Image (cartoon, rainbow over all chains, first blue to last red; front, side, top):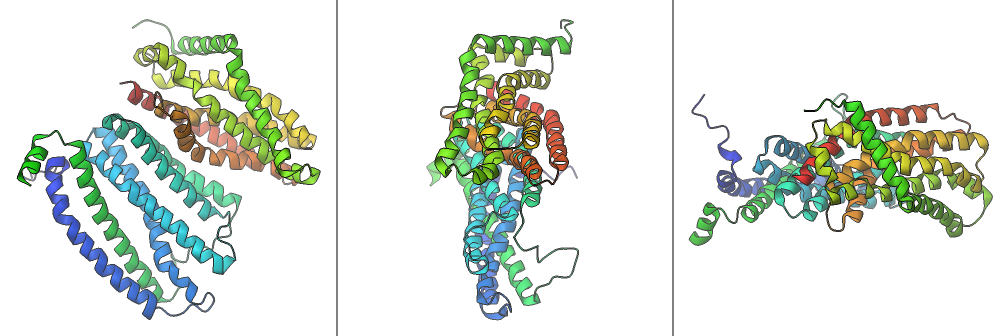
Length: 246
Length: 227
């Protein structure tokens, strides 16, 4: 076991080329899955008997909403690891994830508004899920702005990590408080504990689109973390060497 | 190591902060007056219809109290940071989280408690009945300490940053939402004759939870800010 170097890729220097090698693969896979997923969404999935064609935005809306919540937890997790063990790369990962997470939250809100207009007759309603998704966007922005406001990157990493962790603890509290406050949003149609209430092609389309979003997020985060590494390590010898070679 | 007990240290911190607040009364009054002015703006903005005001009253008073609490946060650590007291607190042998708890308690006594005391007068302006006023006091009494404790995290994180005020709002306001929902909800539930015990219980639970976790996170944030 001792010859497996578990921490080899925890150094920015070794992770930089690995991320560069992996990112295109994830990008291509994301494009393939998105192409297939969109084909299912637009051509194979049946028209909904209640909502007509308008429901098809679900194939963007639901994966984006899933990713927005998932990415926040991943971001907070990396930030917490960086805070606890002072691993530079973990904090860089958190910084690289935040914009993608915020983008996903924004897409979920925007497509939700587009979906809400024909279904509920309003662009926006003060419903529990919409409101907590909006608050999630504020949490992402808080993390990004706090990080941007502190000049020293190490202090910025650690301070942003604290707010990310506090936010992660608060997400369920905010979610349930808003839920008890007001609820109009339809209940979840997909759950692990019971049989889905939607047609299986719709479900497949949504799952494949989710995988596409997931792969896209990984590809983008890997590319962004490479930029963060170069920026932070610009005075390191290996980065200078990289610049000299190029 | 000296043999001063933790309780002694905490009471010293509280007494010191209270004494400073008493000598700088204008600071304390500012956020209180902000609270009164902010609440008075709403009838001017939305009209003086008594029925409308009675519906909006609890929410307006709560939102204004929340904003007043937030504006006062900048003072929580700023002056101690400027004159070096904060570094001494961080270096002291006592656990920083307990000292933070003491500082937050003093801060609440000088900013939160005055809001609670003046709030019924403002509630009267919105035509709330006596039962609703009582619940308003109770909900503010349970809710504003939570606001101070959560706000302490934001105040510590933005310590010494340029343009910290707006950033502090962005960090802290999303975390205030549960307190606002249950605080204003308690008064609204009373007005609708539904009973406010559930709301008040949750406010109490939030307070107990934040007493445990917030000073720890604030202490961590202070160490990050100072090192």
